[in-house]
Image (cartoon, rainbow, N blue to C red; front, side):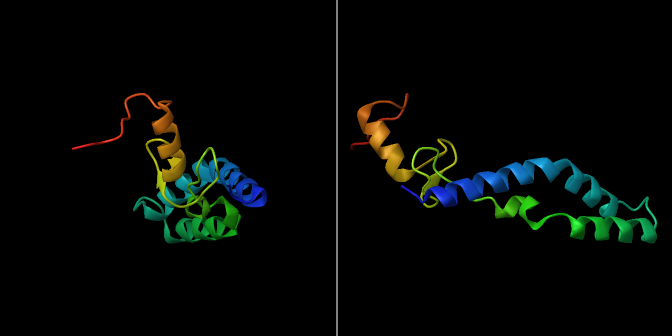
Length: 101
């Protein structure tokens, strides 16, 4: 089980990233678009740089929904390999079986 503070910190990062997602996208489109003047692009760059650093999507870490473990994460199941194996062995995940050959 991960530290509670790490899990809470990551949740806060997710909230900030979702809050500023639309604004970041809008400013990036202004910067990339050839229809805007250099002054408008420079203004958009300054606004983008002044946004909080916690609002960057790259700062959000994928963590297991059950244990909070940051490594060995399966996106499809939103859990770590350990939690996935445990639940699969108990038969709680539909369609997942232990392989044998």
